Image (cartoon, rainbow, N blue to C red; front, top):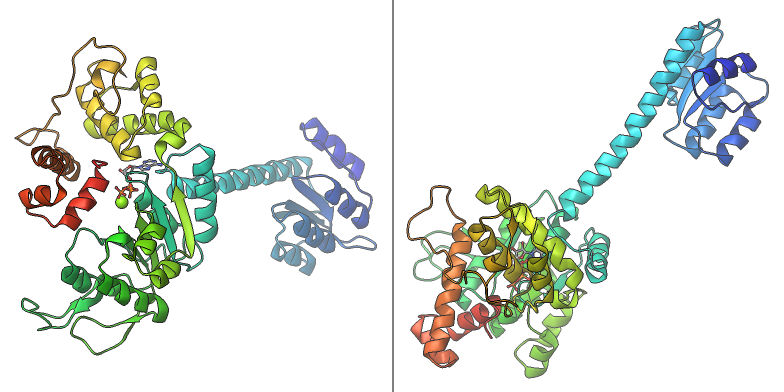
Length: 449
Ligand SMILES: Nc1ncnc2c1ncn2[C@@H]1O[C@H](COP(=O)(O)OP(=O)(O)OP(=O)(O)O)[C@@H](O)[C@H]1O
Ligand SMILES: [Mg+2]
């Protein structure tokens, strides 16, 4: 019977290994990878059901076809229950055997493809929007994957525009909290009292204007993740309150007495050197240690230049889709220029440069002439300068990216204010009707220091 099966299956193009009993089969299975196991159920010594059980232990995905003399006997049922794929009843037809083996192999291939697909899907949903082939970024991805499932507080550091928020989101989407909220709050953008009520919520009548009781972000993020951006900009009073949340996992709404439990994970980010802020006395040491449980540092783009080309290509693809342009890539000169840059504004600056080039470019590849004079001089002076950034007054037919557009204007005005005041921060802040703290935040954000 064994010999017959071997001849038939070899003729079908399969590689066939024979084992004369259960033990011999298990020994073979342990020695080499096998796709399909065909075994009789009733055998002296080790039964076919036992062989299948052992085979599944060695390779859970192995496909088993059991051979039995009695239709619908208990053993056949038992084999199916154990995960046999199919069974043949003796005496069987050769064609039936061939068909069942073909199906079994197909199923095995499908299953393997499925596993690969799932893995690809997983990595794409988790990290696909973060580009980084350099060693430091690969290390960051590894670290994110390791620490994401824990509940530990994380501090993401790095210069402005290095991707801190992107990484914070990746931690959240790789964590067990991924189905709950990810709430981001910029500590530098709000005055102290507003920040407090944003974070903790407030009771009706807690202060003028508090007409209704409002939940804060900590409550909105219950069982999720809170991202505290620009943590260094927190006032001393807020630092104390945050410390308490981290220590006791409890807080009170502004004007409230009730203690509210906070099941949240906190991820903080800063582009400042917090140890220096601690030394200066502007940041509480105890809070620093509570936050800096797991530090993730993002190196500036100039320290991982091999990421520049893939990033640039990523942004070309992104804006090609958004703008409906037919620009497909970058000319070699443009790439060389991009790679030589120091990029003080890091990935954000690179993205802005590519976005603008995409808007200006008329040829299929981005040319040097579509790149700005900054962040470093262009090698040749040929071609149009392109410095006239496109700041349309009317909404273009294909729309625009409003936040980005506003950022461009914001950066422009801040830069002008600095120019007009000869770099005097206090005066520039007045000119823009913002607090010095807000100005500092903007200077960092747009790398204008
Ligand atoms: N590795 C990366 N791959 C793809 N896009 C990136 C990457 N790093 C940053 N970006 C993009 O650059 C921009 C800035 O990133 P992000 O907002 O995360 O920076 P940040 O470190 O938080 O900056 P800031 O300190 O100014 O807030 C975003 O548009 C982001 O999508
Ligand atoms: Mg940020």
